[in-house]
Length: 494
Picture 1 (spheres, rainbow, N blue to C red):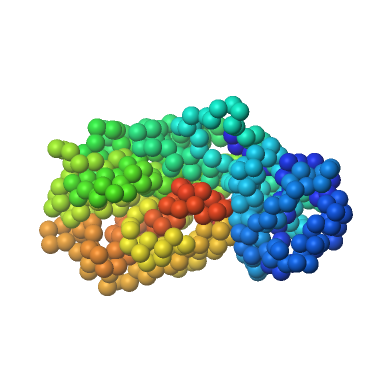
Picture 2 (tube, rainbow, N blue to C red; picture 1 turned 30 degrees about the vertical axis):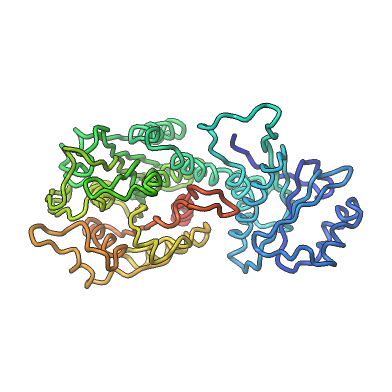
């Protein structure tokens, strides 16, 4: 059940909730605003600080029993040492961790206090709480009634100025809802989250927010000449989908920005089949598409005064008697011929035609996101997305948007020399340049289909989902790249 986070004016000691979460920086002393709470708890907080039992390191938590009145439980959460612009990200992380702890102990309600008053911090706190409270339990049998803990049903951010805090909390809810939509879609197994299901989700978003939604299937894409996209889809009986959502709230004559997502609902690798171990994680190969849907949901909720087009290329990559073979050559939507060296380099084949299709919207900027290469994970691990682009200013804007949203990106080069690695002997280019610079050559391939507009590619293979519990987020999808998409759209809407 999603948690809607609100703002309330109240002193921490007077917060009548199951759990009060208090965020503190490293080596902080007892804030004056907590003296009444400390007195109600018999001086427990002041003794704790005097003994340095809690030091405020990032992700550090300390759980205390509450007093006879006010909060029933008190949770101290460490922020570490965030500086300046890093504070909202630290707040969001700590608030998410606190909400996860609230769920674990069965707190039905929680309040958050951090002593800050800026709109950005309040928005981040609300986002974090809603992210931490979320879980995907649709496919799990509920435990026996006598073993069930109460669900976290309500959460508030304690603030002094509600004129600032109330709309900030509402924005935080909108951002979290978009990210949680993306997380839900990514968590769903591939037999449920199919290309048709993504299309239906797009239609639901369109109906809620009055967006124009267009869905092309196999027959329509054949008429469009999308030979690269359809080459990936020819091995599966499922109908591939090219999904377009148009949000038009900017000036009527203003050209849109375009957000593009790779939507491989399952990627077996095709004829170049992947190893069996870990292949179940290939349901996450549609996180780029989930990010576009989540971002469009949030952008519409925020009513940003901008024009945005979301484009998703969705199919499954399966081995069969009709699947593409290594060595096959196909003609893309742009007219370029592609030699397919490895059928597991399929995401770029889908995105090539989607990027080409995006030209009809005359976008001022295009950002695509894809779980594209394992090579990017080798290069950057799980802490940063790879960022590539053909426009210096746009790359800088996307990197800044990622930093504001807590989704770190790192630029990798697209030097002309790398193009030699994707030259083909029999076609215009080939779909893989081999192991060296694998993330770069994949981006170099996409660049060939983004020549008519400013473009940035996000390789989110290492950041869209986690194979371990992160503390502030559980194992599974993270919501990346929704934050970057939304922060970029907000910057262009100002």
